[in-house]
Length: 451
Image (cartoon, rainbow, N blue to C red; front, side, top):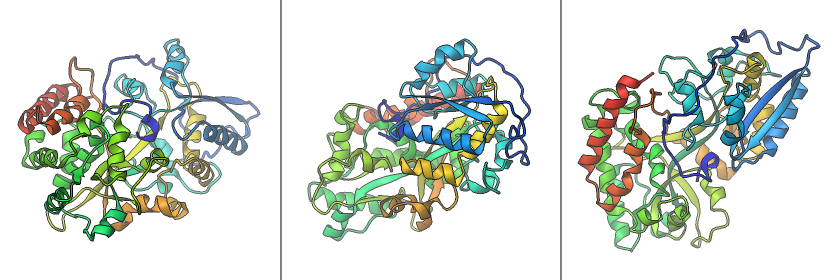
């Protein structure tokens, strides 16, 4: 499973009730000219960083802390890095003791980040984009890849203001065995019509066209398909619950295409589509029993020790276009780093976040396998990683974003409604029409609750 979620049942866009954020001190924000605002002071500041220990490990955070301390002599970084970070920090937060910086992505089962978003518990980070990267003569916005701060995943209130900074991106798409395509002389499909034509050809050789690890992996696939069907306009309207958007002709095309994929999905997929057995579905691609699966760059490490067919070569393509020469998209999954509004050292915390995009920090992260969304990063990647991260250099467009934050609505969870019902659709227990209708109904209930 994806690196920050690998030990969890993925996904929910899960807007859950939980912790209420306390209002905090309103420290003066750093300005672009202040590269090290405490550098002229003899007073030592302790910056508390809380971070999820994911598959990247914890050592990289120790190295990052040391590097920041060397760049900022008057700061000492106190680390809390745990696999169960929410459980570790929650008691302190409930007592009013907040980390200064928190690396914790959305879409976690505990939904701590979403809870603070709903409770207006995050510090605005828009000014960080104009701050100098510590140790470099460049501002953050000029280091970041385009589009990474123009999304609801960083600007959750759809008001143009940034509250979460992007970290560790992974292009996603449909992964397949390039060696099999070479062996069979098959062309990689570029449209959905070509995709289903290939499905018929593969079926004749006892190979399924499609599988998926668990239904939650449709978050990036479905999102890319929305982009391909109606561009950013359709996606953003869907993410902000516009009335009738899920029943529009463009969205209907996406729902119906997922329904048609059911005819070409490996028969064991639904049975294995759970946190305990999902690797069995991934193994289908390695064994040439299924051609494509939605996944992300973490799949290579995740299945590194798994057996595979002779001549197997990892490859990834963006989602097919809906018409010839139409736009094709590859959804980018990325994590987030943020500052609680009740943090005590927000000025230094912002400098720390700006440092995350320095060449020095990026090299430390890259050594652990975590890739920062900064300009020029693909030139520093291994040849294997370039296969995936260069997808945007080969004609695919980036897709990114998530649902706008809402106040809690009892019994309504858009992630469950949109993605988790897909198993029932694939197995034939739920019609596409009923699935689509339930998504529109959930959207209708969330629209009035949008923050």
